[in-house]
Structure formats: C-alpha cells, structure tokens
Image: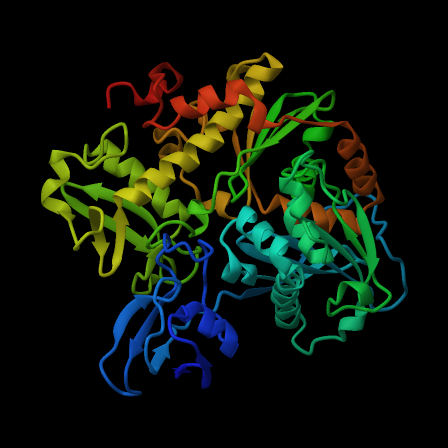
Length: 519
C-alpha cells in the first residue's frame, strides 16, 4: 500500500500498488478533470508528482500514471469561470403572462444546461425584467467531455454523481446572481433548456436508453417541484423542462427555434447550434426538420491540447502577418489557451498562408515553425505553452465536417438548395464570437451572402426566458415540438457521403465555396 498526499487539496488516501493517480484522487475526494474519460488523449488531467512535499516534481497525466510508491501530488487549480452581470433589462414581451402569477416578489429562473457550459438568468416575472445573469462551467466535464462519455458513466452507476455535479454548478450560479439580494424562495418558477442527455441527468434519470435501440429518450417532457429538483428555489416552484424531440435533439433546439421565430416565419431558415452536439434545424411555419451531428467539444475547449472556454486568458482571434502570428486575448491577460473562435481563425489563417494543406497537414512552408517533442506529434507554438498539434487540426476538421455535412444533409433530404434559404441563424453563446469569413473559409458554414447570417447568442437560454414570461411562447413551444421531424443521420447515406467530402479545407467540392477559389 502507498500513501498519496494531495498537497493542493489538503487530502490524502492510501491505495494499492498500481492504482492510477486519477483513481486515488477520487478515493481522496479530490477532483481531477477527465474530459476524455481517462483515455489519455486530451492531456488535461496533468498533475505534478514528487517524492517529498517540497521536492522537485514531475509533470504526468493522472489517468495514465500508476502509484508505485508514496507520493505527493499537486493538482493545478482551474481559473474560476463564473461571470455575473446585473442587467435589469426589460424584455420585449407582448403578452406578459408568467408561468406563476403572484403579488409581491415573483422571480423566475431560466437555465440553459450545455454539455460544456451552463447559463442562468433571474427574471422579475411581474414586470418582464431580466435582473441577473451568470455563466459557468458544467462540472460534469470532470467525468467526461462529451455526452456519450457521460452516458457511459451513468450506465456504470454514476447517474446521481452526474446529477449532483450539474446541480452544484447551477446552484452556485444562482448564489452568484442572488448574492443576498433576495431570498431564493422568491424564485417560484423555473424553465430548463438543454440537450436530451443533460435534461435526463438534471432530472436524475439514467440516460443509457438514449444510446441503445430504439434510441429513444426515457422522458420527452417533464415538470417537477422545486423541492424535487434540489435547486436553490422555492420548494413549491414549478420546474419545467423544454421538450426533447429525440435522443439527440433536445429542448435546447426547441428553444432555439422559437427564440429565432423560425416556427412562425414564412421564409425558409437554417439554425446552427455550434455546440458539442452540433444541432441543425431547417424549416419555416409550414415544416421543421432537425438533426444532430455529434460534432464534439473541440470548439468549446475540449479535445484540443490548448483548448479552453472563452474566458480571461483565452486567445480569441488570430491572424498571420508575414510569418508572424498575431493574436488577441480575452481581458488582455497572459495567454493560457485558445478558445473556439481563435481555433477557427487559426485554421483559416494557416490554410490561407499555406502552412497547412487541404487535408490539414503541415506543409514544407511551415517547416521552420514546426516543433517536435519526443514521441509527440508535430505542433506549432502560438505563444508560451499554447500550441496546436497535428492531431488537434485533424480533430477540428472532423468537427467542422460534421456540422457542415449536417446542413447539407438536411437540405438534400428536403430537396432544396442553400440559395432557397433566406436566413442562417447561428445559435449558442460561443456562436456570437465566430468570425463568419474564417468559418466559411474552413468549410464550417455555407458560402452564401453574408447578410443572410444572423447571430442569436444563447437562444436556448432566451427561449427559456420567454417561456417563463409569455403564454404565447409556451403555446408555440408546444406546437413546434409536435411538428418537428427528426432526421437520424446515423442511418442516413447522404450524411456519410457528405461527411467524407467535408473533411478537407474547405471541401472536396470547391464549387460550394466560390469565395475560396484562387486561394
């Protein structure tokens, strides 16, 4: 048996020889982020190990390193991700008819549970005013970066652990918002928007059936009480979940569609939610078809060596001038990583400069800039320890291919072209910061007149806010849920053909990207 002391957490445990450091941490109650579910791919469970408390340390991966003697472990602390705002913003609601009507203080809580991030908003429902907002990391990431990893963990008996982490994340954000300003019992109604798996885990329901035939949700619609939810709200509050149409298209898409008014517009529109699930909707007031592409977490800071969420210290834009990389950093701090918008810019700039080819491989032109470290893949150093590896680039190309081929598959299955689409809505908090030119040049978004693009921001949260305040919106949510058609890309031949073609920069069919001709 060996003693493992976690000096940064003032905790220790005793484990048998060969136990992984990540398992020792779990036994000691110490949290170590395992986004790739312990496969050793993401490199984000780095810890520092030494034989003495103050001795020299070795940098290792906790999920790959066994304990063979008594050791001291230091777990690097992540920078806090909570951002709060005191908005007091009047929302445009024509028929103010809140879910719960009550004289005096009558607050509502809107929640968007993303796979990577969680956002909340506190509303004064009597006056239709957004009072406070906050955003933070979904702590379920400790147990897996993507939906499938978390479903796997749930299937192994981890449903309650995952539920505890998401509730902890949400309740901390509620505390940030209220911060002794008012009694949480003033929150009398809640609308929860999220993908199907996140909604199940919020409810404490094992989502395993989602990934098993016939691939159906356990619940599509749900309402519970504040007490049952375990949220920091009134015990008798109404807690309503946005309806999920399928296993992989959840209430967040329902919310997106209504927030964008696609369901009442005569014009044909596309909605793209550039998140971990990569949901896409195509339709108007007459029809609505939706799909999900399992894009992965690359654009939200996962599966990329130096990837991170868009917060202080993240490189959020990049350009190449001559042979020099220029970049901007959120909050002007020392760069510690690169967020999604920066990654899209980087791939676009590397391709434009000829540093990577159509397959995403580093070229001879980039040879002087490329580094190797031991057995690691080739990588380009942006600044300090912020790097982009060949494997990272491959991951990003697969992610962008997944999203673009979803768009193409919907259009082809309906039998219309991209020119027949009047609006392309970009949803998701991250979507607001994507540079359209960069996104088009790498083949992430269609090459159409730029005025067709509309940034929605966090439409999932917006839909939840409107549902709290308006009976008209609640009726629309119910109606669009009933008429949505789900296209299963997993069994769609068109998708697989399109997916293969989209794994190049910008695409194997260059006619789809006339702006890229001549690059």
